[in-house]
Image (cartoon, rainbow, N blue to C red; front, side):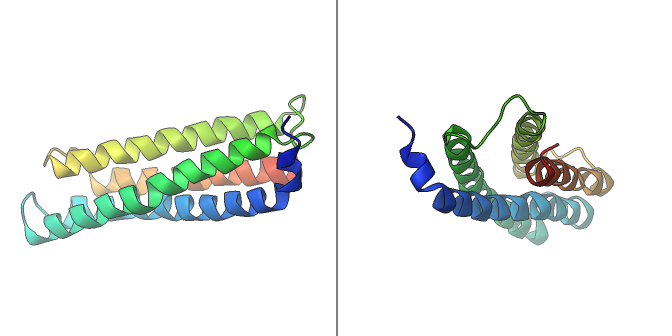
Length: 149
């Protein structure tokens, strides 16, 4: 029934990789914007307004579509016959990491709403620390998929 996915496997994988790159770029950049927002602006000043526009556009125009595309193409790869052997550890490690990355995406979206409401309570240092989360998850995902441990 899903054999047609195998015929388009290379195209689906290419689209998945491009989606992941766009999503990761946003996951790296948005926390950095939050660092600048937390450290250099106050609610209602010119920098606050500019950073809110940048954060909203990054999340809505790049990150959200890229995350959705990543999931769609990733699930297409999962359902392609013969691609994933669920008896191995690597697909479970990747799945857990992708779920964690999705949680992080939503955590960032909530922080953007906090800034928009003038209710941010976090310091730039916290955003700097959280900026390392996607890197750690990316390392697990790449090692899982390439090394197939």
